[in-house]
Length: 108
Image (cartoon, rainbow, N blue to C red; front, side, top):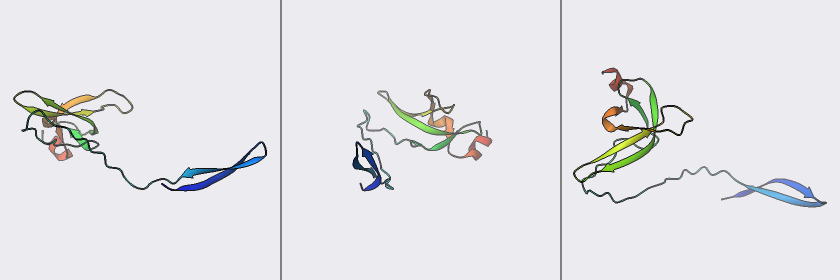
């Protein structure tokens, strides 16, 4: 992290130099690891922040959350999407309800 002199200010006749940090151009990768209950757990089809389409619509949405739902005999991924921007409410969808391409939604 590097610093630069932003400005000099004076308080009670004493000058003070204010420093600020340079913005970082590096992108950070966050990895979350966990141990699934079942060794047969599959990788998610979609990723966090990926643009997807609801099948049967032409509206695109971003994946805002992923949840692995595990039972004793099967596992499945659910994907949280905000249907209205600026809200906290998530709607959850299965992989079969989402697609990456607009063409696949038009076939229905």
